[in-house]
Image (cartoon, rainbow, N blue to C red; front, side, top):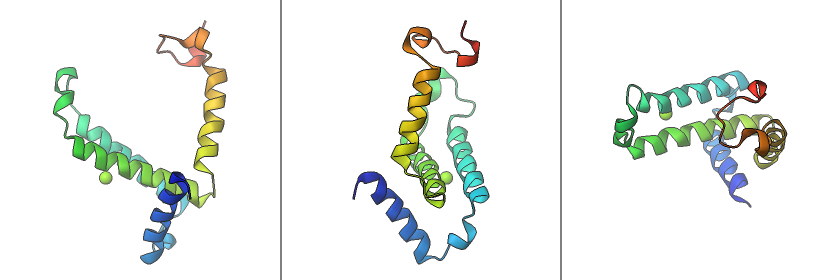
Length: 113
Ligand SMILES: [Mg+2]
């Protein structure tokens, strides 16, 4: 079993043991993902550039894990292959952001000249 499948299995086993799948509809998984992302953002809230190093890395690890967990659970709900959907999206991103147009530029592709 590859790493991605083993992550998904750990999550689905955890959920199955608690019979929580009944609560895990796509809408609520998506909301939970967004809420966990907000919890991650909260760690950085009001910190200026010089203060960013003061954010507790253990808290970042935990909130990032929550974000990943809900993302994996949402993917599992749709039976998406996580590696496949990331690879497909990166291929699209590569076309939207060709190196010659986007290198050293923090602009959205719609704002390219
Ligand atoms: Mg959290």
